[in-house]
Length: 302
Length: 302
Image (cartoon, rainbow over all chains, first blue to last red):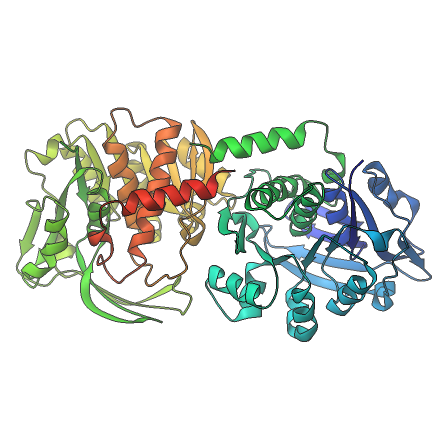
């Protein structure tokens, strides 16, 4: 049986415009991407809130991937809705609107079963909610956490509190610099270790990812892809896939396990960026992950 | 005996300001960095021009590394002098002045011995001079070429002519996009292959390098370093080291040889960025390159 991973974060609608086209109210949200990504390695259980406009069709990808959605609260009102448009490089998004809707008053309550989770992925949400979740989880063996610039600016003290309880801290390069005031990413990573995280993984977007940990410092390239369609959710997919893989291990805190998790995160993200929403990610065929992992390892071999 | 590599480009003075300090009229220039880098693997011979102010002390690093400087013309006048200052991130340089001086009328004339060179590294200079050099070389087995945004803008037709005669084309990501109008680097690289280069290596600065070739598509991370002092010349060092290594092989045009060359280029660049000028690069101790290559390969192993 696959190990449980509790995933807490947003389940949302995205409306996206980019060079390839337009997507209207498609399934998005950090918890959606990360849980579906994790589902290929572990058994994710989502804690999130949606509105009454979250019609049954939006649940199909979760169901298909065996994601436990019993922790999804449905509140009177509208689902969190993000709208953004991308430059032609598909890298930089301009937010057009952020309608928090029912997410504004999200108060994550774990079920008895969820509070027994051995692994937790705190996707990007208010760090105070992340802390509230951690209080409810009894005895996790792996706490992974993602955050964003908005929280580092507005609730830095809470972010630092979460950090101290985090085994695996994910953030992107701009956020690492913002949080520490250091430009060099190794120096920034080391500062974050001093702040209390056990291992730091800095997401480098199209350039892969970097691990800074007492176990070692590693930079890995991405799984390279020519036909990038939409990069929304790539970072969440990376974090969820890496965490799901580590949750599947008896002993996750070794350098080789974390390196493998980064490779898996890179490969999972490569599926997400091939379509809008989770269309590609939720429909990975048997053998496709292994195939890309093989290509990836062969690229790095010499 | 090491194989000959002809290196054509600038030998210059650099005046640099960055977060770490100030360097006044130190040895710089693309040919300096690339020839010294290549010297650890092959026997480089430089074709360049300097002024009468190029005092003997500037020749010491070349001599130390066994670089043949008989092709260095000395002209009445001043040596090419570049001045720039870097942001605190050490990545983006602002040019303060570019005094071409004697370099303005540089007309590379190869010696009889140089025209027999089996490998050529055309460092970043006017593409018309690169073409003139190629006409003088009898029967090279490896032609490597670097360029820059300035030539892509002002002399694109000549850059395209050089491309058709190039086995290994080096450029950075912004230049690859500028030359092809493509944002995705794989797509850009493939377009450059169609333009006639045999293999394209896109330099990614702090993120390593990417190969686009019929042999394969590869992205490698850099040799990561916490204490970056000055990034001037890193790209030239990368290209020169990679080319010098390939020139040392009996058969260079295989995927594994080019991958190894990229690893070596990454490692050589890591020495350059540890000091101003070639101070560190020209003084690598026995075993240091091997040590970094081992660390690098161990980072990529899993």
